[in-house]
Length: 377
Image 1 (tube, one colour):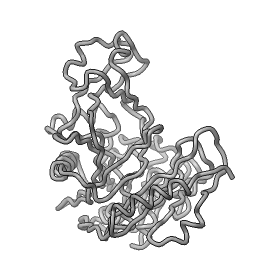
Image 2 (tube, rainbow, N blue to C red):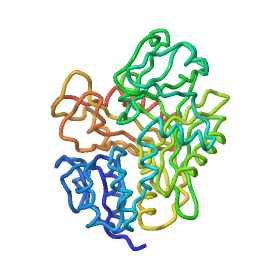
Image 3 (cartoon, rainbow, N blue to C red):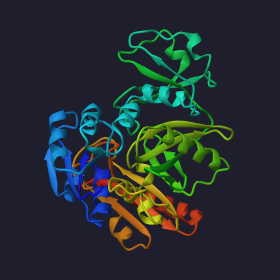
Image 4 (tube, helix red, strand yellow):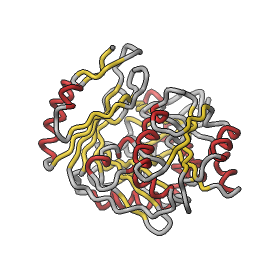
């Protein structure tokens, strides 16, 4: 398959980094996005202003592209499926997008393929909870509530005391999950090609206390459950239809591994691969888009990465305090996504450190957290 033009649904920072990777391979990109000042517009050959839910807008993008991909799941997957049936190459497979878009559907599909997950059930809108529903859960105190669709970056996810839920009802259907405790969170990026799958080293994820966003991550993760984590991630991706790059988020409690969620695209947990691996997550997706098999990414440095988030309490223009100091440091990179305004808990950029010693990187990151901040301009 000869690919020169890639159509990307979504114009966020993931699309921008995909474009930066692909330009080195001679690829060009047309991006469909509703905002003219989106991050991916900076490198795209053409920005198509439109809706990711509009079949007409997606078809227009497809007319100008050899292959279509996504950088966000919230797209019209049925329109992509129709294009695939007409012969358009779509990576990831639209069926995988449809499965993953709905959290209950994703849970049920993976359960059919014997993937280890937290116990769960779907609570219908306007129906009261009853105590017997929670008998299957190991945690008898708290549960995790998730919107079935649309939630991301910590939005649409809440932890509730079970006692407060009984006799409670909600306006929409919810996925109710066992709240695994104690737990550590991990992620693995898996690239699935026609002939083989490859995976990146495991990363440990530390979640931001307030926004339920990734605060920082470490690669390589130091865990005795590495083999089970990798086995679970590969089995889950193998079960999904078609090719693609998948981020598999998992929980581990010291004894068992549980799949949390899958993203069928580049992911926040893989940014550091740009600096500390022979191939980045964006390189891997671009290989797949060109009809190639994924490469085997090798880690040449340890790395830590943290998100740079918009502070609470204000919205507007911003700048990075401490950026001048960062620019003078070796093996430290501040990536600014180029978003026009800051909003509370909005991802505005990330900071990556890499080197030989993970302990030293942790210490440096802790120091930089006090120096590098998003402030009003």
